[in-house]
Image (cartoon, rainbow, N blue to C red; front, side, top):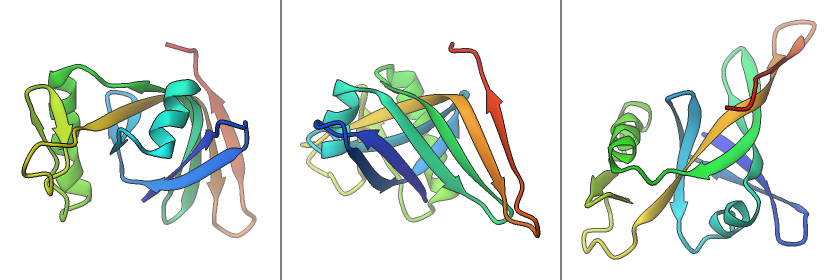
Length: 137
């Protein structure tokens, strides 16, 4: 599970866990449309996503963009079950849904963060760190 850090209304940090997948050069995650993270990202898309792994921890910095294209939403939805076998979101009429939403009453937002900077922190003896910067696409 990844962690998302975004700027709150007062400029302070807001950090929450998210289910994230890698798609088309971006980390993609979803959230309810009325959540604090959705409101924060709509106001200011600048954020960081942390991704833990066995031998390295990653911090990806970038700007979150709302995914609106139905075909891309479908591709993102198809990635979640491979990583999170217990969760099978779906897309209907160009909207992304939690599988528990059988009445289709609460479509979710999907945000994509294309990294502009990535930090990697090795966990082996000696703890290594490195940084990569990418041109803004």
